[in-house]
Length: 328
Image 1 (tube, rainbow, N blue to C red):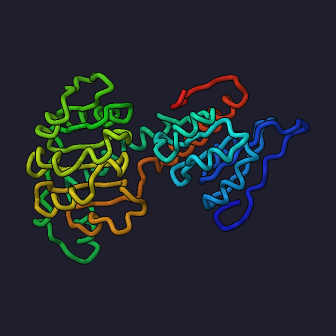
Image 2 (image 1 turned 90 degrees about the horizontal axis):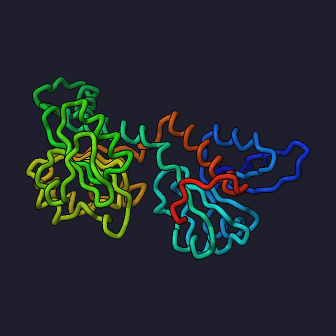
Image 3 (image 1 turned 180 degrees about the horizontal axis):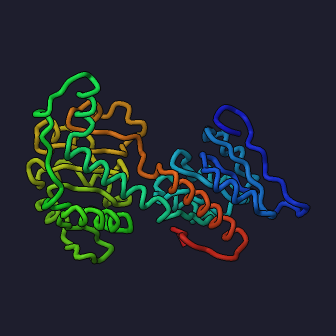
């Protein structure tokens, strides 16, 4: 059933009894659905926009659940899935899934850690360039009939120090692209080592050195609000902050205060503490540009993520291959 109440037709088998039933509770790209349609031993229903109560009532019949970021499988939902074996997250972040509850119930949770990576890295660079050159404000000015070139003096990326917080695969991709612009890279990540002529530093060192800071960390108790008032106080005056990772990495009140005082010159944000960011103190500030969580929104990424997650889930159900499981 789609958001308007219509049902997505269940895949029909070709003379072979159905074996594995998969529930897709968020919109998935057509390429992923087409891949499922090719499988004789799988049926699926795509039912988007369900309430928690509806999902609890629906999930007992299914062997697997595929979600994106809108569905939040918590302990109650997972417990209701009496046949549930796999939760597949179409994307990298699994902070919307109760991992502990899934583990307690013997349910594998898997993601697609690289399918959206290029799209996210490119969105990071797009926002970094746009905020450095006042692209959005300049566009709006020209569209309003103005020609105010002197108001939009920008800064170059060349020669600037980029601080990358979270140096996993996406952080590496951003570093490569930033190096092509002539940027110097420093990175902080307590779990990985550096390469690409990237200098790994402590978080205080990164905050003190970076002209631009970009976030690519997963959300953990340690990284939640990693950009807070104390962290900002240790940054350079006039720093720029870019976030195409997770909104929970930034204390929005602290960032808003720093943007208003000028301590932080500007910010470019694709993600927010609450989405949509109703009531966020960052909305409406003149030195912030916003996009609505578009990091993974490329045609190529959507095709990859859909195909990869359905293949991973079905392989796990069949017992032929287990990969990208975050609670193994």
